[in-house]
Length: 166
Image (cartoon, rainbow, N blue to C red; front, side, top):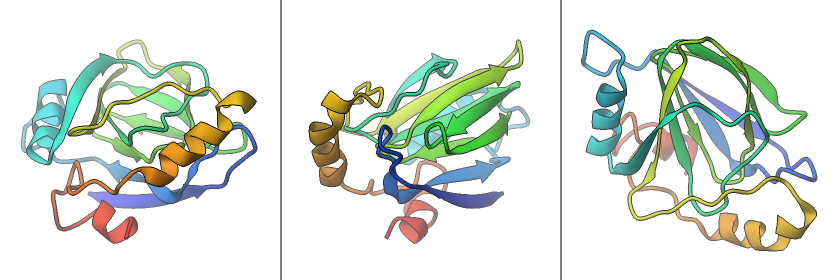
């Protein structure tokens, strides 16, 4: 498995974050299949909860009150990360994205079998933000106040976000 960091600058609408978004390529869930359950079990062992299953919204949005984990368990999707001037990435079954609060994400196309499971650090709730000017002052305060989670959702306590988010 490879962990790749990406940093996105504030684009005036989407604030993004000084913390890098992390892409974990081909996560081994210790199962012969990449399933929603295997990803939920992995994330749960590492202190991430409040799981949901579905897709990724087809409009730019971000969260200011929580970081978010997205694990693709089947199919693939093209996801625009970081706002309109961000980076278009293809995620496939077995790929996981750790999205810091404030980083925009938008589904730009997906296979008919695409499935993703999402979750949040234990004890945190997400909000929905869209890059509107009136959101700005409060979301910047929210993002700045968020602590770094105690455990990486994929690698546990010692690696991953501890290395990249310190």
